[in-house]
Image (spheres, rainbow, N blue to C red):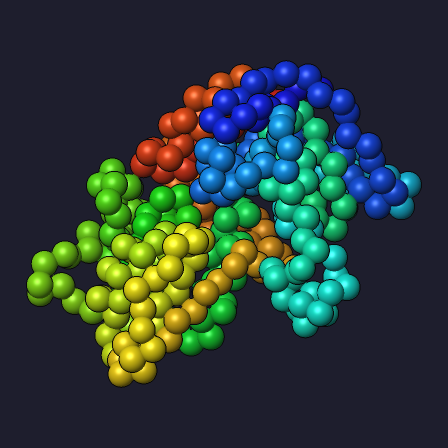
Length: 330
């Protein structure tokens, strides 16, 4: 089968690889399309070292089940499905507590198990979610939508009338869209003004940056860098919450005194917990109450995967790659 292979950081070659083996509880998915996100770009650049080279990246995938293992009902063949790429063990302490997002043995598609930028992907059947009637652009956004919905669930408090979102790449655009749909006035901030314009097109407003800038009870930082967190902290009101989704590894300039004196809440949110968060994302897209595909701006063929990755980091919206025939209906 054909796949986009990362042969070294920054270089992709499209070539043939062996067909994957189907286990008794697995399904085989003829991949229709794959969305790109910051994690994929980290693997592409070498910031996140691939387990081996060549490596198949990609995890925000959808497709059609074309074969099943002996323990999976054959009625599943032909289903259109979205991939939940974080495969939990369900036996570690975190999984037993319901925190599958913190599973110590998690196997993630495209990160430490084979990715989805190939004509077929095999994974356990419970992580292939049936969905009908959604556009391909919505389907490639289901997984990052689950990230957003899980983060909002974990806040545990009613949403304020207004909030600030720092970093409006694909994840920040989805967060902005979800907040706007819930009646929140979103103030969007990004160093890339084309992305801010995209957020405004989805209903946000441009965040003010002068000395009279307002403060917020909720600031969402999808970047997590020292610079972005510094901006976020400067815009939090007393008692406010900073919700961090970014995974920057550098230390932050944050003191206990600042947290205590301003009575701040610092809330991190990693992916989502199986099955409820992903089920909520599937339901929102399936019933039409949320259309995440509105953030998609760029599409590429599998043969152009190199170009897709090179350009994705600077695009004003989300990029996806068409893989199989399902992806041609866009």
